[in-house]
Every structure is written in C-alpha cells, then in structure tokens.
Image (cartoon, helix red, strand yellow):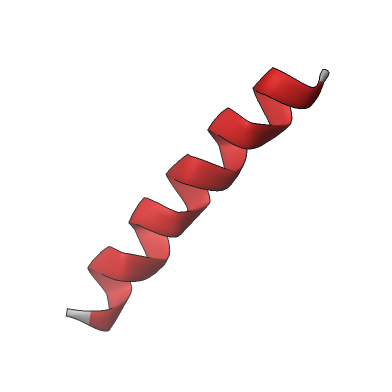
Length: 21
C-alpha cells in the first residue's frame, strides 16, 4: 500500500532529524 510506505518514510525521516539535532 502506498499510504503505508508514506507513513514509514515519515517515521524514518523523523528519526534522521532526531539524530541530526
């Protein structure tokens, strides 16, 4: 499902932002 992929990507991006901060 495309929507599921979108949600997963959003989660991964949030993790990356946390690591960068």
